[in-house]
Every structure is written in C-alpha cells, then in structure tokens.
Length: 327
Picture 1 (cartoon, rainbow, N blue to C red):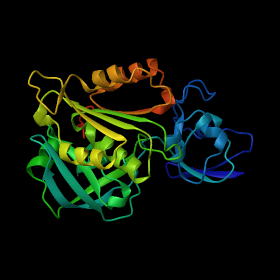
Picture 2 (cartoon, rainbow, N blue to C red):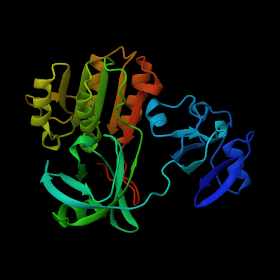
Picture 3 (cartoon, helix red, strand yellow):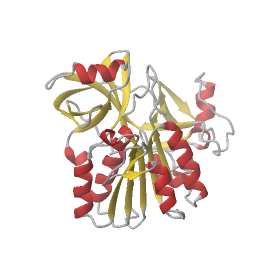
C-alpha cells in the first residue's frame, strides 16, 4: 500500500488501483475524459515524492521535470502528495528591492523572496495586492540572479497594475505564490534551434528563457522576434543588442506593426516576419508569449511548418479579474 495526500487528507491506494480511481472513490472532483492518457485532462502535480515514469507518458519534458503526471496512468510506487495543476500554494513574502521604468507603460519590479522559492526562467507567479486580489506575471529573471523580476504593464482600469505603477514602493513587503507554468528552457539539446516570439510585455518570459539558455551554454541558433504596434512600446532593446553582440548565434529582431517605422525596427507583425523567414521548423523549439490571438495563431503556423506540438510552449497573456494582466 502507498499513501496519497491530497487537499489535506491522506488515504491508501492499492497496487492495482489508479490514482484517478482512488481520488474519485474518495469523492475528489478530478477532471478526466479519455482515461487512457491521450486527452491529458487529468493532469496533476506531485508536490512531494516522484510519480512513476509511466504516468508521464506523452508529456512535455518541461512538465515531467516539474513532476506533473496523468492521474489515469498513475499507479503509485511510493508515497505522494499531489495537487491539481495550479492548485493552491502558500503565500511567500517578498521585499521590493528595485523599481524601474522600462517603457511608458511597463515597470520592472525586482523582488527578493523572504522564504525559499525555486523557480525556472519563464514561469509565472501570482502577485497579490490584497488577499483576494492578485494577478499573474511571468518571471523575467533567471535563478542565478537571486531575484524575481516582473515586467508589469499598466492596463486601462487595471487594479493591480495601477497599484504597482502608482503606489508600490521600494522596501515594501508584498506576497507571491507560485511559481507555476511549464514554458521554460530545458537543457540536454544545446544544438537545437530556438525561436522566441513575443508581443508587448510578452517579452518578460522570453527574456528570462533567452538568458537561461545562454547561461547553460546553448550553442544552437536562437532567434527572438519582439513586436508591438508602436516603437515606444518595445523595451530592453539595448540589453538585447548587447546579448546579440556577445553571442553570435543569437539574433534579436524588433518588429513594429504600426505605420511609423524607422531603423532599427522592422515593419510587420513579429510572428509574420518570423514565419516568412523560417518556413521549415522541423526540429525547432518554439516559445510564444503575449497576445492570446497571436499565440494561438502562431502555434498553428509553427505546427504546419513542421514543428512538433511537444516542442511548442505557449504563454498567452489575458486580462481578467483574477487572471493575468499581461506581464
């Protein structure tokens, strides 16, 4: 018998009983559909313990590294504490150590967690203004920075982003939860070409992923297309140009879809320019971040150009009362 802990309760699972069946028998409402590992509806995460390798069949490498698994395929071999993906996590206090204006609408918030917080560049955290008021922001820093960097875009009538831009102060203590998400760089294939496409504050996770790949010695070509409607909405240009100078296999492209376009910007949507240049994406690893319509369209275009769906990571930014404000 193995012991499973879920939502504060502990129970036993028999050797021939799947975790999904066990949880359902305990009255837990675990989403499921095909019950054969194809739909991935029953995706869960092991908070402690290691799920059996067979329960991770068909998952992206990033998900496997984060101990995600499919409950319908999981026949536990050791004690586990599990949760649904994105389940409740404890709040972590963090001190604001720096605030910078990256553009007219985007503010850098540098945070120092006051409790251990392991993250991967490109994941996201929940930033709390109050206990029940939070938004999701992608991590733009890398673990060796020893800081959490967020790029917070000011949204019209945005409650949390307005607070960050107008009221947040250095040395203030705020609270985070996370990290969450599985759009991050995975080592092991240093020669694999990487394509990064982002719009607006969608640069945040891509900037982290880029620096993480370079810090791990990635040798394959890396192309970053960052787009916005107006030149003033692009940011970190000098930093990205500096990285391209010192990494001859990294190329940065600043794309403007509006009418006023001058050097060094290119006219057109970032995704359009990327796919016009790269028509065969077989073997490429692709990261998409920013406007949800762009992310969805680019995923399909990349797939039709030969990229494997398992090699396409997406981080769409949306705005809801309890969701992401894009950053």
